[in-house]
Image 1 (cartoon, one colour):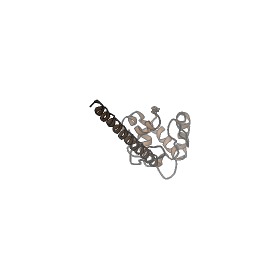
Image 2 (image 1 turned 90 degrees about the horizontal axis):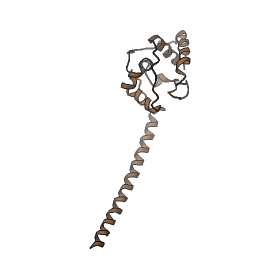
Image 3 (image 1 turned 90 degrees about the vertical axis):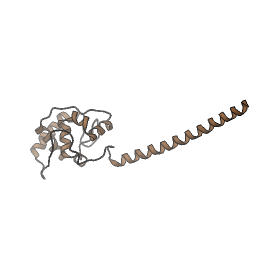
Image 4 (image 1 turned 180 degrees about the vertical axis):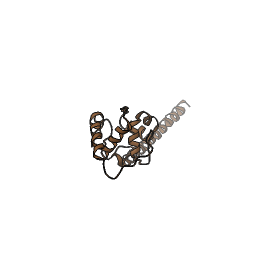
Length: 159
């Protein structure tokens, strides 16, 4: 009788071990597929959303057809003074590369991120996703005026 109970217990143990192994393989395949899909969405791993205007004072911004060279020059000087610590124009660093930013984000979103990074990181889904993507490196508030942010935005158009 004891041998029968021992035999049944051993059989149950072997069967339960086999099932766990199959579930582990399925989980691996699902994770692998999700990663591949995520990379296909965006080179940053964050979705492109040109309709999101962000959280902050800028509600509507339309760029004129021609770049204002004076504004862009002031924006470039400001970028070189405060932004290059975390951003490069054509390469990821602590923060995203700035070239082509208006192909990924709306002008309003970019300006709101410059003017209100704290609010954006708390409330905006894209800003939250970028925070995760860039290892929780928080964009510091540079206390820019709207004119300074607009100059920076104009410079970013030239990249």
